[in-house]
Image (cartoon, rainbow, N blue to C red):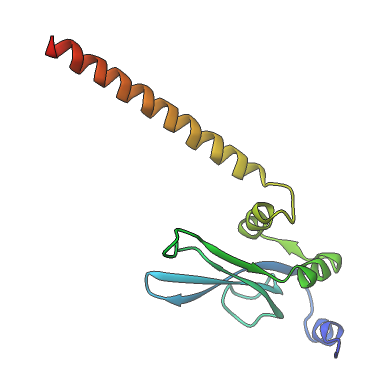
Length: 133
């Protein structure tokens, strides 16, 4: 296997490698590639290597599909690549990183909102029962 990273780094001056999402797909049907690219390149431009994929829309079984190449992600992180927040969240949910703090915060907010909604429903039912009497 040919090692191209030193060749690519000589060609590019400045910046650093970042692991991020590159948008693909059609209108109203997003699909993301998880790629290693230079931070100064645009989102969908040329990238160094594709490391996985992410389909954010649920399929028939209500699953959001994610695929990673863990060996190559380990390689790029060892080379000093940074990860963006969305990729860090996905890697945290997959067990590669610790859970991102915003993931935990978001789960707590949703749980609290569900509890307050339940309380509102109970109060509404009590009011309806009193009116019926």
